[in-house]
Image 1 (tube, each protein chain N blue to C red):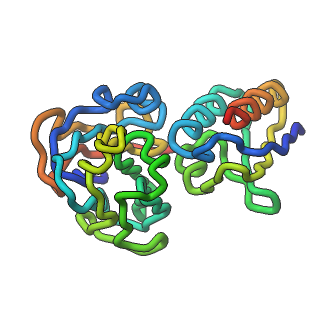
Image 2 (tube, chains in turn cyan, red; image 1 turned 90 degrees about the horizontal axis):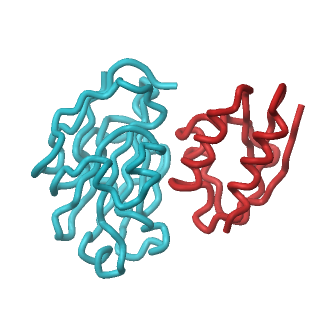
Length: 153
Length: 85
């Protein structure tokens, strides 16, 4: 069982609220999404684990049990080529849930014409293994979003 | 055994969006499908985690491998997905 925390503060909108059919259709995996508060801040690790991949605009944290969570800071933000994002940790490092991973500014992302909405996705999760703890509404960074029980492939 | 060596043309590499389409297509195949960087360890093409961890950038070459009925078809589909700029 893994409890996944909100990496950013804002409003929980669910994957259905992501303006990208690949995320909203659950093709990347099940999970949720947060429309972040429009102020510069730090994106946190959603679970304890290893920073498996760290891009300026997205990161994957893999827990010791093999469950891994993707946090994507905005949509199509790979095209910003790191502008407005500053990694605060290193790939391969171990982090605790709630530790800062990337400093970013959702206002800058929005000004660049990209949606700052952040999908938080359970990678390779089997259907029906997530329990939603916070389906919609305001959320603080570090608050519990969903539980991931059962298995992963 | 079917093998394809293809250049990833997607501008974002094999990341979130192309990666998801790639994994969904591979997952539908009735056979095991692997992907590797040349000389690297093959990983399952059906795992989004494995594909994101492989971290394929635009312009990199990947080697696709499948064996059994429908192997050629799924590799052709996967090669087509990564060939879209």
